[in-house]
Structures are given as structure tokens and as C-alpha cells.
Amino acid sequence: MRDFVQNFPLFSIVGCLLSSSTSSLLKGRAAKWVNTILIMCVGAMSLCVMIYCLKNGPFVYIMGHVPAPWGNEVRGGVLEGGMGLFFSSIMLLSMMGGRKKILEEIEDTKQNLYYILVNLMLCSLIALVYTNDLFTAYVFVEINTISACGLIAIRQIGRTIEAAVRYMIMSLLGSGLFLVGVCMLYDLTGHLLMSNIKESVALLSASGEFREPLLITIAFITMGLAIKSALFPFHAWLPDAYGYSTISSAAILSSLVSKGYIFLLIKIIYRVIGFDIVHDSLLLNVVFGFSALGIIFGSVSAMKEDDIRRMVSYSSVAQIGYIYLGISLGTKEGMVAAVFQILAHAATKSMLFISAIGLTDASNTSRKFTDLTGSAYRNKIAGMGFAAGALSMVGIPLFSGFISKLLFMRAAVNNYGKMMPTMIVLAISTILNAIYFMKTVVRIYSPERNLYEGREGFVKIHTKDQVFYTITVIIFIALNVALGLCSDPILDLISKGLDMFA
Amino acid sequence: MFGENLLNNYAEAVSMIIFAIGFTNLLLHKNLIKKIIGLNIMDTAVYLFLALKGYIKGRTAPIISNGVIEADKYINPIPSGLVLTGIVVSVSVTALMLALTIRLYKRYHTLDLDEISFRLRKEGR
Image (cartoon, rainbow over all chains, first blue to last red; front, side):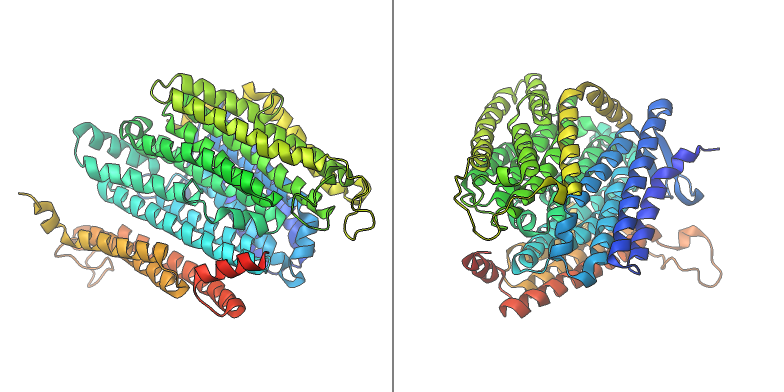
């Protein structure tokens, strides 16, 4: 007899699919409420799964009563539940913060389509988190790609359609590589379930058979997921896609979509190939090189930008570099740091996007820095949010970004070969971050001295006109400070969850 | 003997070469329609690879015929199932790409992606 909680992962996935098909019949407003309630339910169920697994350990849920090597499985654990909870809360906040923009920028007849896409996106993220089957993971990777593409292209301007095409092309290259990797792994081991593959791979690796095919398989899967999550130098689509889509899409794409793939990669490293085999393959050194370059180049490109949203987008490239840096250190500390950085970056980046839109709204929707002078006085809460996000990105204590930088440093010390390069890259990137984020914060807090007096669009936005938005930004700031101040229990959970993976 | 494995597995090698052709096409071509053709070539190569892996010499398709129910008369059905799933995915992705291409063509009257990006940058928004 299984406990009722074990059904929750499946309920979340099926619930998302059902609500997205029913939303196609609903009007925009109703679809919005379905979406909000759905995200809350998924979050609550993920919380239950996490608490259940803390007490009873991880569980495997067999679908359709077909047992292991043939059937499909879902697996719950502390990290899975925690990620599900975190993803759904960030998604809820992003939707709340961008509510007004969705109404303005998307045609009335397409309002409900937007919520369908968000439901599908949540479905694929939750499925990627919980699934125990590699081919199911591939299918949901594609669903994720399609819904992300829709989220970009639903705002109908030339830039977004071009960005969606570019995103699609890069994504399809990535999923092609991932698919070939999965097929080769099936060929080598004869299994598609993660736990079965792991046993076979361990046997193969012990006997030394098929060494090269195994290495190429790992390389294909890693490269495929790296391309999809915009690791440098595969980030060309990113600034346009994040910079011009409607703001909720930008926040969801930057903070959740790429993280879903990275989480899948971590899962594959631990649960499919085995951490030691990946570490011995020396492939992580290649990833290390790309991530170090990405951190520097992302920051340099962000410095050159003159557009606030593109600047924030480019800083994502650097932050994704951090996550891959943690993975490529090849130690458990590095992995914990990478998972914490996933959380910290998701919480901070979505806040930056949501605050940036408040600032541009108070400046006649211009994103140029010259027009943003003093905008933090015109929209106080957005200014506060942006400043907090910037401080977190730079790595000031009290905010989440500080803890993740600290964890990376600590992890690097334990890795003799990669210690110096990691330290140097982190130091350079912190300085570059400080330059471009502080430049922006100083600019938005410079008194304007009636520069824009009487100019159209440069108006003061009061808190009472944007109650939802204000609440969202305050929750975001609180979340960031909470991640920064109470990092110990969270790190403990992450470490427990990673142990359950192995 | 060197190359023995290659000779024995020539079909897998061919499918990987086709995959590479499709991959490069999708990555490097400027023309959007040719990119989509590349995507389809790439996916088809994977299906060829899967179909090869499921095939066992001297057996028939896994559909019960003449009342024979012994499993060793039929090929492995799982790769065929994977191919079917893959085809569904690639059809939907192709449809989405074509739809986006039509949108871009209506706006800019060209299929050259670099040209479109250049014009967008010139427009400045």
C-alpha cells in the first residue's frame, strides 16, 4: 500500500496538462485564475512531497502498474520536491509582477493562449524534475522548447519573432544532440529508466568495454543540454529573447527554463551515468573552460549594453556560467554551490526583470540609460527591487548572491587543479558585475532636477496604482534576503537531496 | 583488423553521417526553409539509427500475425515506439518553425535570417 503523497508528482503533471487543455475553452480572465490556482496547487503538492521524503526517504512511483525495466516511472525526493516548490513559487511571482504588461502587450483574443503556454511550461518543468525515464525527459524537453518559443513569440513584433526563430534553432540543435545521446545510451545499455541505465553503465565502466562510445554519449548529452541552457558560446539567441518578449515571459525564461535543463543535467550526472564516471571522463574540464569564458564574456557584453533589459539578459549568460562552473568543479561542494546558485539566480533575475519593467514604465517605456535617470524616484518600489537585485548580483552580504559566491570559493579551494582559475574568474567577474550594476543603480537614483518636467510618459507611478506589483517586488526582496540569511537549512536540504540522488 | 567494426556497422555510420549533415545544415544555412530541411534530415537520421538498433535479422515486425505469439519471432518493439514518439515531436516542431517562418516572410519578404537580423538592428527596435 503506498501513501497518498506518492501520487502528487503525477497529479501535478496531469493537472497541468488538463488545465492547459481546458484553458483553451476559457476566456482570458478565467484562464488567468485557472493558471494562478494551478501554480499554487503544484507548489503545495511539491512541498508535501519534500516533507514526505524528508521523513521517509525517496520513493519511486510506478505508472500503470507495469514494473521496472518495461514501465515508466516517476521519482520523488527532497531535491525534486524542493525544486518543484521553488519553480512554482518563482513562476507565480513572475506572473503576478507582469500581469499588467500581459494585458497591454498581448492581443485580447490571445490572452488565454498565453496562460495555456505557461501551464504547459510548468508541466514540462515539473516533469523534468520528477521523471525517472530518459525518453520521457526528451519528450518533455521538446514540450518545454515549444512552449518557451510560444512565450517569446506571443508578443507580435519583428524582434520577438526573430528571437523565437533563433531560440528554436539553437534549441533544436541541443535537443537533437540530446536525443542521439539518449539513443546511444539505450543502444549501449538496453534500458531507458535512469536507475537501470546506471547499473549497466557501472558494469560497462568496470569491464572497460565500449569506453569511447560511452564517452561520446556523455559528451552528446552534456553538450545538448548546455546548448539549450545557453552556456557560452551558444547564447546568441538569449539577449533578444529575454530583451523583447513580454516581461513575465522574460522572467520565466531566464529564471526557470534554462534551470530546468541544468537540473536535468545534474540528475543525469548523478542518477544515469554516475558522478565518478563523469568525473573520470575529463569532460568536465571542457565545461569548465566554456563556463569560465562565459562568465567573463557575459559580463563584458553586459557592460557594453545601453539597454537595461538587454544588460540584465547578458548578465544571465555570466550567471549560467557560474552554475556550470560549480558542476565542473567535480566535487560535491561544487554541486551544492551550483544548485544553490540555481535558486539564487532564479530569485534574483526574475526580480531584476520585473523591477526593470517598472523603471521603464516610468520613463515613457524607453529602455535607454539616459532616459532612466532618476526613474527610481518616479517608481519607488521598482527602484528598490532593482537596487536589491543589483546588490545580490554583485555579491553583497545579506543577499543571496553573496552566499553562492562564498560557496563557489569554498568549493574551489578543495579542487587543487582548478582553484586558481576559479578564483581569478570569480574576482574579475565580481568587479565587472559591480561596474555595470552599480552604474545602473547610480543612474536610476540620480536626482533628475526637473529634466523631464512636462515630457510625456515620464510620470510618477504611485504605490496605490500598482498594488499587485508592489506586493510582488516586496516578496521578491524578502525571498532574496531569506536565501541570503537562512542559507544553512537550505544548503542542508540540497545536500540531503543530492545524497538521495546517488 | 582496422576498420572491421566500421564495416560491420556501416549502417550506423551512415546514419551518423546523415545526422551530421542535417546538424550542419540547421546550424549554418542562412535560408530558413533550408534550415528546416536540415532539421528534418537530422531527426530522420536518429530514427534510422533507432530502427537499426531494434532490428533483429530474420524476424518480422512486432504485430501478431497468423496467431504466432512467441516473442522470439518478432523484432524489438521499443525502438519502433521511440521512433513513433520522435516523429510526433519532430512534426510539431517543424510545424511551429514553418509558422514562424511564414510570419517573418510576411513582414520582411525574405527568408535570409541574417538579412532579417540586419534590418531589425537598423530599425533600432
